[in-house]
Image 1: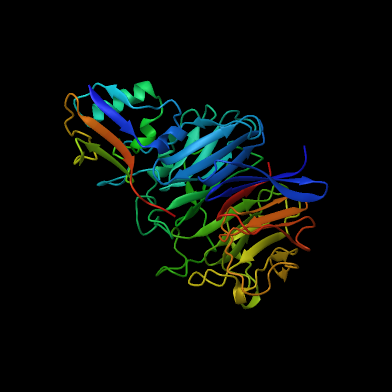
Image 2: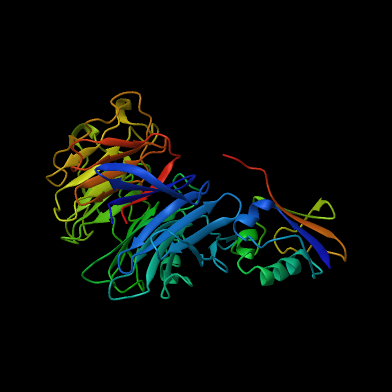
Length: 360
Length: 90
């Protein structure tokens, strides 16, 4: 099977393949529909796609034959759940799907907007809301869990500790990082060291805005996050976060993050100017890389547009697999590097907004 | 029996969908009976709480239904019920 990249755009799922050293678009699925979430379950090879219909709500589809055919799965529901006593919760968007561990076959976690974490023990045929998180005192406090760019808080990142599948972290915008060590029975905030510059108390226990979190498989105590207020890293499993943003504030703000699977010191980000200016700094589309845990960042942007670029890369639109990096932008541009970001090629300039990418 | 007409956009997801006649004294009962004929379709029409989706309209006898939450608008024999998506773009 040649290397393949799946691109979830606001107008369809685009499959890109490498043939004879050339990357080409080879297929489009869900044409005209917004693909807001992509996931490939490494345990069984099943592909998952979340669709955001303008009229028909959120839908979840899966494919057991690498996208040749798709079936619709059950969608998580907030029936009988309330955001506040007088406000029913309604599914707005499915943000992230994650298998619950190799020792838990058929089990999946799914994070949504509003901030619900759902669990399936039957491979997505049915979903159950994690009530212990839903009823967490911080979730019920709108000064600790609140919307960021959306009307409601949302769970966009789920990482499962490969050493212990009962040990799970989630990233919530806005609330922060939460951890369970017993498979979801209890949750605690893990935000020490983070900064929420938009709050009266920037060091509040909750109310932080991680845009994306990734755990290093080679050392699961090392977790990176691109946050609203900078780039942060922990080397002790989230007990303490260190701000590793660049000197003079660049890179700092952004959404996209990729990390090396083996080297705990290496990561890439694609910065934007600021929350008020969600465009590349100086309109130069720039990828920044660190190889020393964030002490220093360098630009690895050869062949990317160095002027008049208005591309913003969303949180799930930057991926790494081996030495290949790829990202897509809100302007429908798709770039790929085969050498860890040393240089880039343009795969398309004609897509719709790129919501998410994945190497299946 | 009411006569039900669907927006053609739904045929993409339910290819066998055609104009049908179906029992039901209220809009909610009609939708429940449509679900029996086309399993899964109700999740396209109503949200988690059974409320009519925001960008969807149902007309009975040419008028928009008033009760979008409990879907209790009356449906009479020989009424025409139209299920259309609202106009929204982008």
